[in-house]
Structure formats: structure tokens, C-alpha cells
Length: 307
Image (cartoon, rainbow, N blue to C red; front, top):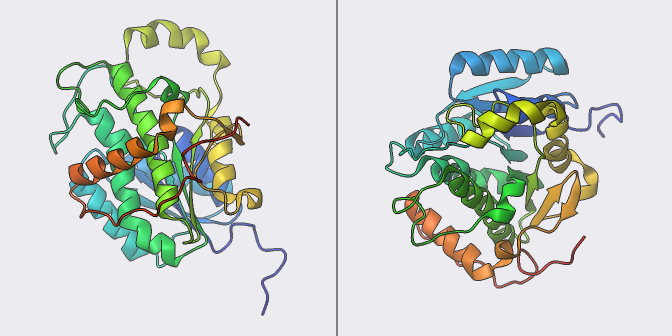
């Protein structure tokens, strides 16, 4: 029997949103629950995540909202999270890698890694790889990763990825956001022909608690002044919701978006050799087995037209 034409557009779809207990993540979860998706959100604090899930249920009118608790700066907790998601969801149609943050001073995770790089890049890298088989068997499926316009100022310092020799909070953040883009381009190439797509986006400058734990001096000075002009979380969620659900991006992979439009990312991000090197180094840092050789292709993440 064919589905009713009255079915919500995301009915029957399952979505996981990391960092979904506030800000852009919670707004994205709400925007995908409204059209009928089953949505899982992750958060570090159970009480806050449960409160966010209750808010998403109320705002969307959809009670199929689940909570997963994990501090994603810890690889052990990312692995536990992945197993809980696999146990809970026989199918996973969309993974939204939203979790991330900014810290002005250097911090080290339980795994001995620099916190910004660990949370912003290695956590989505590891989680995505642990969920890839489920996404493949659920195809067509989508992986959407939130980067930032800061990727344009980023440089991958392979000789000092952990900021041990020299550290700047802004430089570490820029590097991690460039890594999000390069990871997506390499991932898209590896997923060609599987029915799973990978896109990355800049949500805009959004009014959230971003950086509040350890703000830089410029954030303390200028954020109160510019906050009234920043996007609301609902507006910041427009592009991730679009990439997760819109039919007009079916099959689109290996692209960088802003304001729901494909854009050119930094020149550095299209370095195919650096993308592959970052993948290999990241796999080593999270203890993944050496991945299969990616297919040789220059159609994704290599050269782009300006759009």
C-alpha cells in the first residue's frame, strides 16, 4: 500500500543531532521533528538534555525525541554513544555533527588530546565512522557537519596539531573548523556510490552560549555589542535543516553551504593530499583500523567553481 500523501515529509526518518541540548542543535532538532522525523539529541548533562528534549517535543508536536548522554571530548564516551545509537535505531537516515565549541586557553582531554581539536573534529570523525555501516544500510542517508566561516582562516598544522608548541584559542578553533570541511570532502569521496551523502556548512554568526566557558578577550568586549545583530538559533538552524531534509539536495555531496546555498570554502580545504593525510592522522588518533583506500577521484573536494 502506498504511503498517504498526507504523511509529514520526514515521517519514517531517523535523525541524530549531536550537541542538541541548546542553541543551533536544539533548533535543528525541533525543525526536523516538526515534519515527522524521529530525532535523537546528545548532550553532556542528562538533566539539560532531557529538558531540551521536552522542549523539542512541545514545540514540534512530535513525541519521538530521544536523549543520549555523552561528553564527546572523550573517545570512550563517543564509542559508548555510538553503540547506544546502534542499539536504539535499526535505521539512521541523517547524522548531524553539530557539537563543538571554543576555548581560549589550552585544555587536554581524558585521551591526552587538545580539547578543541578533540571535540570539534575528532569527535564527529569518530562518531561518523562508527555509524557509517548503519547509514549505508539506511541509504539514501545524509551526513551534515557544522563548520564555520572561521574555516577560511584555518591552517592544518600537521607538525603541531595539539598546540603543544604554540597555542592560540582562535587558531585552534580555525584549524578545527577547516578540519570539518576537509573531513567532509574526503568522506564524500569515500562514500561515492553508496547512497550516503556528506555536506558541510557555515550556520552564520548565531546568538548562542558559544565560547561562554572560556571566552577570549575580544568575545568579552564585543559580543555584548553585536549580540542584538546576530542570528537567532532558529535562523542558524535553517541550513542544517535544509541539508538534512530538502529534496533539492538529494545526491549532493562534498559541498560547502551557507545560507542554504553552495559556496566556495577556503582554497586550502580543496587540497586532496591534505584531506587524505588528515583522515589518516585522525584515524590514528582515535584508534580506528587503517581505512580502505579511497577511490581515486577529483570530483569531490578538489577544485570547485565559484558559485
